[in-house]
Amino acid sequence: MNRTYELMFIVRPDMVDEDLEKLVAHLESTVTSAAGTVKSVDRMGKRRLAYTVRKFREGIYVLMTIEGAGTVIHELERRLRVTEQVIKFLTVRIDEEQKRLDKIKKLRDAKKKVSAQPAAVAEEAPAASEAPAADVPATA
Image (cartoon, rainbow, N blue to C red; front, side, top):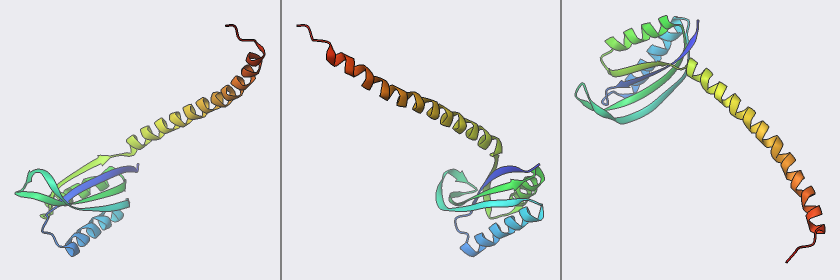
């Protein structure tokens, strides 16, 4: 069963761009060889870490969105664990979250449609009720 995952990993700040590209290409080939697909790769650049990790205060962040089975993720995590340049990584399954957000969005859209229809009817009603009020004389 294919699921959607986000894989965020942080590499050493002194890593050369060419080496980073090789690492990302290697991970992408690992995913495709294991019958998965890489939806997107976002190189977020060098950022300061919240705390020191392996004596580094900065790191280069990379976010990959992957679709595949759990075995694909297991293999990726194994490779990231033994790669010396990677100082931290985290994998999160996001397909359940996407389903939940889509459901909430449908409910909001349905509520907007329902609330928009009575507002149109309510706009016509005050115009009709204002005309008889003008016929009634005001008392002092």
